[in-house]
Amino acid sequence: MAEPGEQLPEEVLVLIFRYLPLRDRVAAARVCRAWAVAAACSVVWRDTTISCDCEREGTLLPYLSACLDHVHNLRLEFEPSREQSRRAATELLNALAGHTPGLRSLRLECRGEKPLFDAGRDILDAVHAVCRAACALRHLDLRRLPFTLDDALVLQAARGCPELRSLFLDNCTLVGSVRPDSVLELLEACPRLRALGLHLASLSDTALQVLAAPDRAPFALLALRCACPEDARAPPLPDEAWAAVRRRHPGLAVELELEPALPAESVTRVLQPAVPVAALRLSLSGDTVGPVCFAARHYAATLRALEVRAAASAELDAALELLAARCAGLREVHCFCVVRPSVLHAFRTHCPRLRSYTLKLTREPHPWLPTPVA
Image 1 (spheres, rainbow, N blue to C red):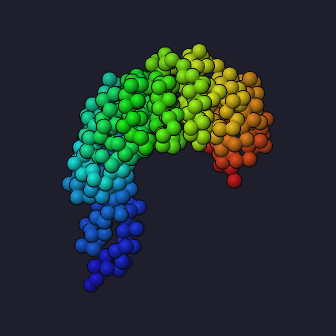
Image 2: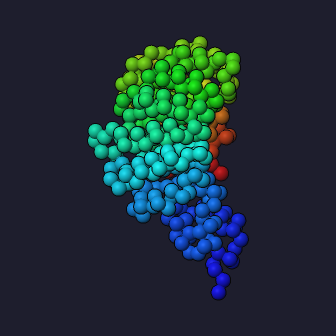
Image 3: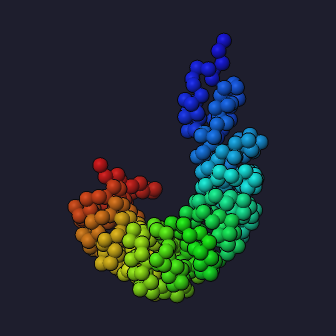
């Protein structure tokens, strides 16, 4: 009787296995010799997602060790409050540090809540180890880590990963601990960096000058999160510096996320007319109408996505209608409060490129799901 693997060519099995979750890849590899060979092929492991939330996946390190050399792009999910999940993620990252010749992209995602007063030292030390070893790493995304990211991590990435193209440090944390000097060293050590996510306090006028230098490689995305006390105290960045960066990189898109911790006077310092804001997320404890009107006046040519979390009011409705009339290039608008029908009509009428929106005319149970535009 023929083995199951002989029923399909190896190249077909490889194409199938690369779309299987980790547990199913392991099960397939145990069916027969032919399937085991196909499941260990480098193409299967090039793009891999591992979820340490699943009990079985947390015990597969011996099997994974033989395949880590083939992983180019890894998304690792874990739950920091579950000891087994966290230990599996830490062990996997440390193992990866010893098998990194091909690693190009690493994205870490936490699920659930982290324990109180948890600094995440075990996970962060493992990330340090990967950055020391993965000299070919091009993309590092730590936005979903709930731990405080510090200078040591940024400097390790700068010195160990000179080929970086993107680095995202704009995570949800109550403390911003990355100094502007560390960001400067990163920009100088990684000349091909094209996308950077930071807390506002980590960005400086000098960093903008470095980005505006004539010999700087094209820079595409700057994501800024304003959520902690350090961001509220950050000095204003001159409009002239933003204008210089915009001239050097005409395709630059800036994403701004303003959180409740930001007082009104800080909001006015952050929103500069020359900033090419492509995405604006407002979740302010104070005035939201003013920032929406400011965006309508100054970001009409660049704004592609807007998210607003605020209390419903006639003033906010009027501001949204003004923005719809001026920002014809909008692709997405999501407002998490009830709006009047004229707001929905304004966006549907004036924004022909709109792809999805969250504009509710009556209260509905949460979560509010976006409406796609056909």
